Image 1 (cartoon, rainbow, N blue to C red):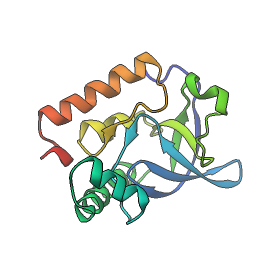
Image 2 (cartoon, rainbow, N blue to C red):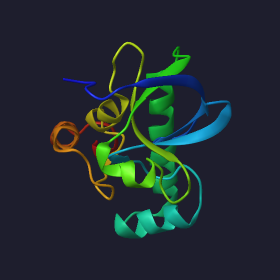
Image 3 (cartoon, rainbow, N blue to C red):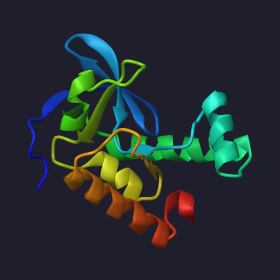
Image 4 (spheres, one colour):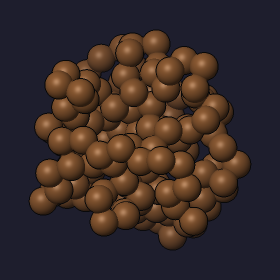
Length: 157
């Protein structure tokens, strides 16, 4: 059952892209990277070219899909003024931050929607296991991803 770790809720400022949001964290504007998911880049940058190569697609396609993923995340969070973060114990050693200083977290709406899972389930994200995930989360996210691919949802159309 979710959430089992303690949750903290913060003011949602805006959506950066399909897997990153900006919140007000103890008075500072801070980026949060949604753990366990990766979406195509919505802007032309080094990573967009890398994704294009990796997925045998052109960079325009990656950016187009990235914009769709961002739009989907915006829709999922529309009307919510706050989001609640839950941390994965595996990232405690780095204080739950990535190398860019972004907070790594599972994002929930105050009424309990698990946003990382929904992005995968709706087919707007890839599963990302570069950061180790607690088995209970990994199982849920893996299943959501498989469901989307098998049913041709979102990016898998």
